[in-house]
Amino acid sequence: MSTSYRENKIQEPKLSSDNPIPILFDTSLIHNSSTLLSEAYWSNPQNKLFGKPIIQWTESNFSYVEFRLNKEMDADLESTRSFYVKRNLKTKPEDDSVYQARARDIHIFIENIPKFKYWIQQANVKIKEQKDLQQQNLLIENQKKAEKEKEIANSEIKRKHIAQSEMNRANTIKIFSFLSVVAILAIFIWNKFICKRCSRCKSLNFVIYNITELERFKGYIKVQEKNSR
Image: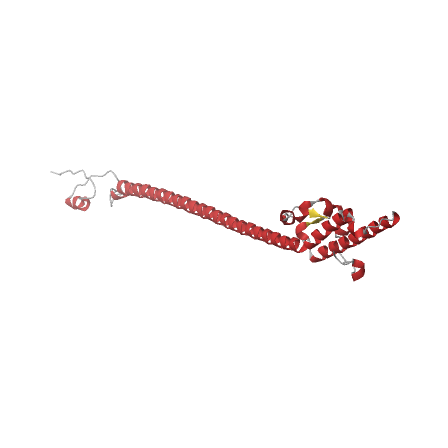
């Protein structure tokens, strides 16, 4: 059995003002809940003991709980002794079955505190690994998303480039067609109204009478030949 906290004059561990353990501390949880000794309990991030999440328990929290349990056990022994004195019982108060059962629960809890700490540590390691994996998966997902967006952007640029090329091609064809029409029209006008015009009288309706004029226009225009007698 542990030495009395009074004999060791142990000072009560100080916890922060926002720590719920001093307010919600209840030894009945130690006596009535066997699950407190299981690894599953101390590894579950959802569980709370005395108002504080299990995985957030620190060395000072355990020290405070151990101090309170020892204090409760000593108070329980004093109460049992007082009960025995009042009833003039000859047996030792330490041998009282109720006291022994309650003290045993407390001793078992205190003896398992190193296990509790280890299980909390392992749980926090797993939680950290899960968070790291989630962050890694999120990073991979964001990279895939960025690559997909980049691919979509490149496809859009390529589509616009193809559309612009098609438009330029269509405009080139239009310009070429327009220039072809203009060239044909110019050739027609040149051939019809300029090339076939008489160089002397500028008339389009003329008759060639001498050999000089015939030779001049031969091969270029259709002439109407008249032979003088």
